[in-house]
Image (cartoon, rainbow, N blue to C red; front, side, top):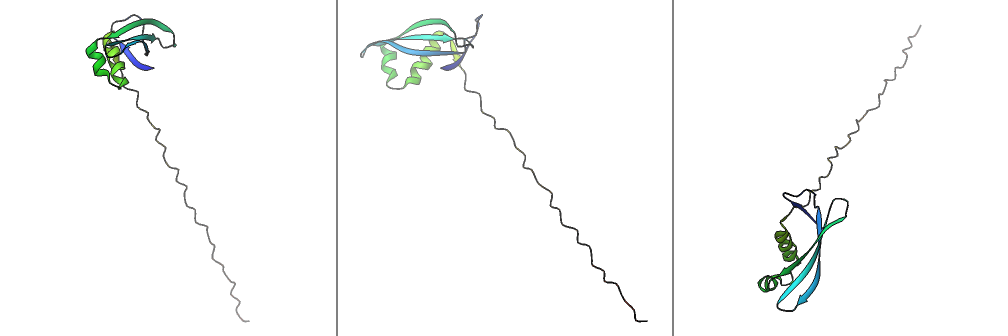
Length: 111
């Protein structure tokens, strides 16, 4: 499903699916387009037919179809939100040197 936004509607469309309905080889093609709200519910269905010129531009690039359908329906495809990796600060353990007490030998003086 493609993430989109439409300007000037009372209900937000957040995505749509495109399925080939009819193909007239070398002439045209018709697609069924289901548009979804943010709950995944289909809120409208459209039928989009490519002209012969559009069909010839299609080739095998399906993104051409997605972009053309979005344009015909007045949708603006938003780029996906960037994934922001959390910054993890390294934990630096303090180095603790052991305390060495000097050994003091008692001095014994002769009597």
